[in-house]
Length: 247
Image (cartoon, rainbow, N blue to C red; front, side, top):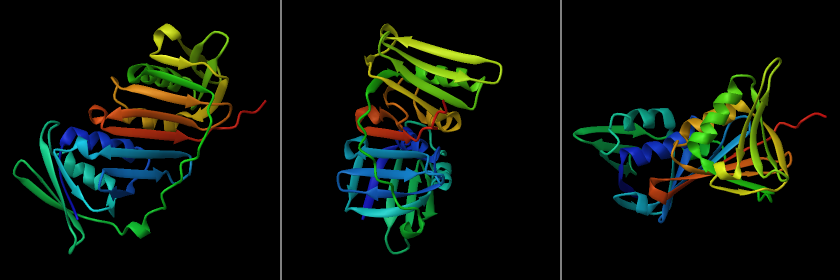
């Protein structure tokens, strides 16, 4: 059983965070939250979403799981404006999701969850540095890096207590430096890792510019990026595997 009412903007923010990495996913309709965890086909990027029942106008579920085509679901949701309410109801007999909004109703055929890639385990990493910054600052650094390269170096310099978003191309390079006064918070441990810029660009598309974004970083370890949505009732976590730097 699943029946819920939620604002279009909340649902869109949640789905956007997942669809930047995968085309289809399992949605866990738990009693206390709606949850999605997925990894991209190359096993490089992962997303973990938890949307508490308090993010919904109403929510009833009994710990089921459904499989969805994200692009089709987002097309339906995109018909609503941000503050419109969307009604979702699972028809267990037909295995379709009924969607209603402002006089418009539609049904979405679901995918067999067993045919969708298995949900990944989240590794327990002890990452030395933690940076908290505004989504707009992260966006600026990623766009600057994208002008010169297809990979980006994220590092923290403990001696100067600064966070760097760096990129080095064949002829040009970029260094976007943020000091403690530019950041919301900084735990300046030793951290330096290289990442695919394409993945970070995709993740960045979903991160609101006014979000408080926390980045956990280590020495050639995966990076964890997390932020809240739905007035704090939702949490998105991305993990991205590093590119090993050659000496």
